[in-house]
Length: 265
Length: 273
Image (cartoon, rainbow over all chains, first blue to last red; front, top):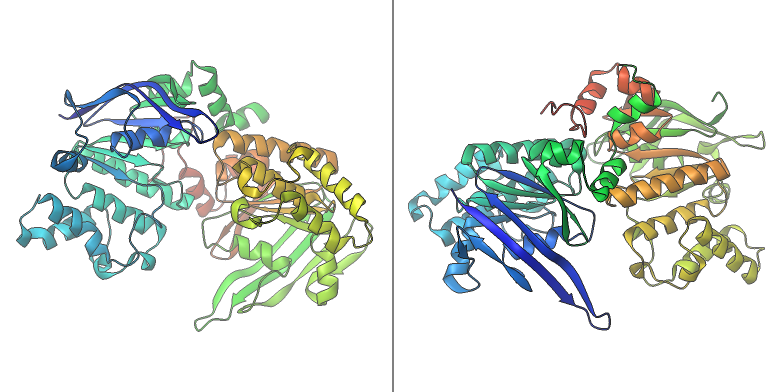
């Protein structure tokens, strides 16, 4: 059981000529293995800053992040080891894969660097990971441009899973994908989460998928947590006006037709 | 709703590549005056090719092997769009049918002010207008879409995504067209800004009375804003009906699949994977 504690984290960016911007103010939550937390909010709400702080791409201005009770490392081998515990799936599968390298390279690198399998077993592990994300073994020698967006995002997931992390941060993992592919990729993530007992932070602006795939939902607005509760409580019984606003703005044919057609069924 | 604006009959588009692709196959549909017609379907189903094709915006290797597209103007005249020559086509486009493109970021010129880009429309289509008249028209447009005249000298990068999309809408409305084709106009926006833009489109439609063809793969969104919805798959329209019928009584299996592939915001947490 691994858990990461975000305790009172704030992040202020200094902007030349514009003073400073409080990207995060006093954000606290705990993500444990075996659990999916959805983090929702509109553009600029601070969702991605949370991801950057969790992966130590940014340091908090104040507050702390603890992994199993210990402050997360900030440099050197300890930081590298930490980043194998907590992995990231990025939004844009077109930009996050290196166009010069084969799919094999993308999945093999983290295996070699982390040493989770002996050198002789790397190839078999690459195939196991591709199989896990439901990619045909035939893609292994292809390069990213030869794959569809959905396939690329599966490669990104395989790469994230390679060092056998306990926690996964998925920052808008399907927003660049066609709607018809989104559910497939999310269902895959959800199956792997359950199978491996991963802790997943699912960052999105889509309330419907957040509700569908998360145990808990955290609502961020202007860098503050305005609501945090079980997925159904937050979406079906929102307490904070901002959460209600988000919900009202989200397409919801169910309520729309109930209101407009008088609930035909 | 029985007042047709655009009649498309047995319309096809083929990409004449080494292995020819029939991107649109024998599509027939009518856009009525004042309605919002939703065009739904996944990437590659031909919805954008259809929308571009009827305005003859496609370049070779795309060819139109068959069908007819007839425009029924508000002034009572009918025009065969497939028969227009280059000059007539240039005069027709944007004046009668305009478009809001998907990527407001890439559709706007990064090195010209939004005011200059809006003025361009008038320079090309209304050459008789004086500079002062053009400026007045641009100011009016910026006010109509609630960006505000103060932004006339702003460059696209100085505006938020929502404001850029409003500029695109202003540009589409510049000549008061009778039909505006919107290709994924809100897909890149977050949900609050998306709703704001949709409300804007609704109130502008009430003010100006144009029809809309709204293209998106976001079926839940389409169900809320469309009068009728055409569901496309593999270049064909598999179902065309009122939004309520698509929702309550979908006929085609593909429509049912599409409907069930969206997680519901408020209903039971069930979905077909």
